[in-house]
Image (cartoon, rainbow, N blue to C red; front, side):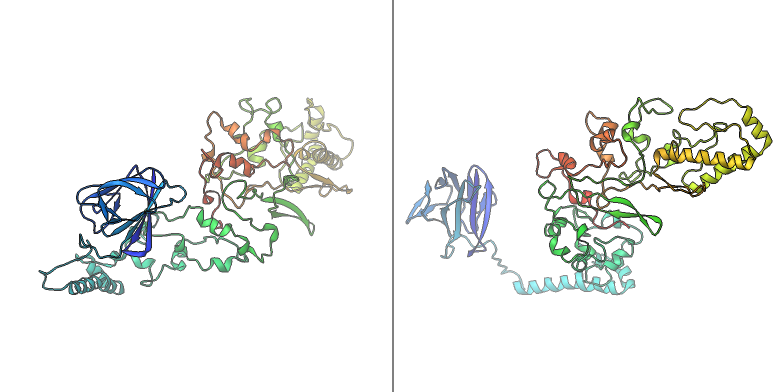
Length: 561
């Protein structure tokens, strides 16, 4: 049963303290064993057992009696609307607030206490000094030992070292608690002055930044909230000498206090497209959809440039990747079409996607590391070990010309080529064995023919976007659009892949595909990144059996440099 006891505070009938108890009966008395302790009561306990909101039974022990209408009783009924006297206190039943079964008011009456002197009255008739004199002696002793002496050591290092060897207080007595482990380093040691440059002044940001260099701000320099955030010191969030030790705040209140009314801080922002939406928690109602960080090619002044953008989430028009790469996850994850070269098994995600040490990002995908073992850049069936240079069109074209001119100019190589029997390889250009003409002309013609095959039929064109113009110059006829693969789809968030790779009754491949459904993706333009609702399946706030997730787990306060 939930009881509410509203009692007077410090003997004032104008100040009250509400106490709540989850007990079967209330014990009101003057000793510490009582549920409700009241000063100046005779020995004994008043026991109250509630019947309903308006009635209760009571009984008194030892010298206690309950008075009503001038009649003293040691047991009976309490009724709403009747005022009862218990020593120097008035007791009455009141309406219980929502959530409580029974409530009483306990008020100190105006008449003087007759039974006991207050436990706070101190008498010392035997002392040579009065109470006030003793108080002054204690005050000045504390002032000298814990302020004047340590402060002298603070001003003079020699004195400080001397004090450290004596059994008297030093400036360590000012410390409210131990240093956090992260700060127990030789550069700080026992020297408080490293951080506390001026006595009785909060640690300034300059002292923090002397060690924590290259620390990003919370917003960019041109953000409207800069002036508001400049009012805060590092120590406002990072509390040192506190127990339990926790230098980094992880509670959501740190973020929601501002982000629930974010429009007040972003008013006047020039970048409305990238404005932050209000957040009050992590669920569908209080957290906006995730915004992807996209990398898009722009052709400016005859050159390709890559621009970053964070468009608003639009389920009607899903964003597309513009990497200029041709790739099908569906094909590569189909064992009937593609197998592991060494085992013949079906390819899995980590054949190509290798997690970095940070547990969040992946090593960049490169031609030499991830593709060349299957997609060799061979070009001449008569020389099957030769491969084209990747990533440099001009070098590849020059290599083709140099190779074929040599093949048709050198008599021995030309004769060997003409007499060699070769087997046609599917998907490969059938190179000329013989050529009527000079070695230079034949070499150039064969190089152009092979380049045309690579850039328009099979080879480079398989994975790359290639444009063609009307010129006959092998060095400028084709243009391969540059490729840039996005490595950070959610640049304003952080994610721990390692902690998400343990799911009951699922292997690693199934876990990957449960968030990134690339096995159904046939084009590289598909963006298989999970949205907010996927995360809410496990982390929805205030949902039963939901995995707790604080703001700081996904969002860094300081921008990474």
